[in-house]
Length: 448
Image (tube, rainbow, N blue to C red):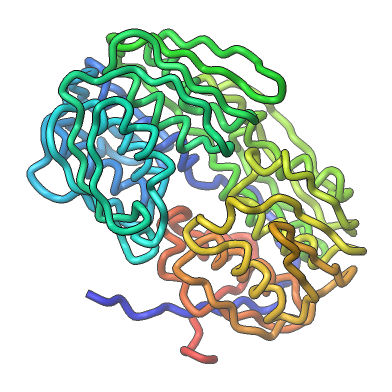
């Protein structure tokens, strides 16, 4: 069934103000459901992101035999089956738009004896899975996919899985996590080396559930060693606010004159803090308060106030710590004084869309001069309000959609996005939350 597009329009905004909480961290929410399903006993999860992507993970883990129930507002229960205890699904696993869920689940299924077929929406079916299936094949699993390793994907889990020893060629938390998840049901030690440190939610959660994980520093990267076939024990989880979601109201507050916004309980994992580092370098009026630990993850309250920003040169090594934040950072650069260069963005070409091209088109359609040189994005800042007035092609990409709307709030003329229906995959209630701060985002007539 084809769903009609849902265009949205964001006009220049009055000052934004207030205190909000953003939805739970998507990366941690996916993993909480998966680890709960692989543990023995009952895991209680609070703060789970209830967006479509995460609900697809919940449905997939149910299909594999876990009991997952929503136990009232902001509370979920997962009765797990233990490592090696998952069952063969009776039907196709539809992962919707979630590349994270699909790739991590490949790792789980690779060492779970049985047959499974995985698919997704049109956007996900365009995304390559070979980066995980090729190394996972060394466990003894068999993968059959469309040309280019794309979904739908048939998986025959290894009956006698082998542990892995693999160096990830390009920094990727998804690939690393898939290999570690496969290692849970393999004997001996699974060893994964990454050339640059990527977000470590999987390592943190493995320890939280009782697995033995050793992390050694190797130059600028890390070597993670996991002892296979542990008995994971149920462990309650409080999911912090998603820093990738917080980026949108945060940057809106920095760009809209007179604004001051506080976002409570945001995850501050050091390997996810690249955007905050960039904003500080740009001179943003940004403070962090009430820092604390929750479920093994650092959290705090972020306050952003409007102020002038200067251009930035972002090194390629920062990409793993902020891979999802580049579109909204580019919007900030469009309002900054001077020319910004965001380097080494090859990974953006294989996200929900070609985000590198999509981000450039988003800015160009709204009067911002922008260029792509190789894998670098060059943004010529306006030093104030960008012209706006354009229509953004979102390509079924929720982060391009929200970035376009934030640009509209800061621009001289309204910005329209061609479809905002899929924003809820990662940020349910985004428009309503922005309205609570004073933003007047509304439905738009197609082409209007």
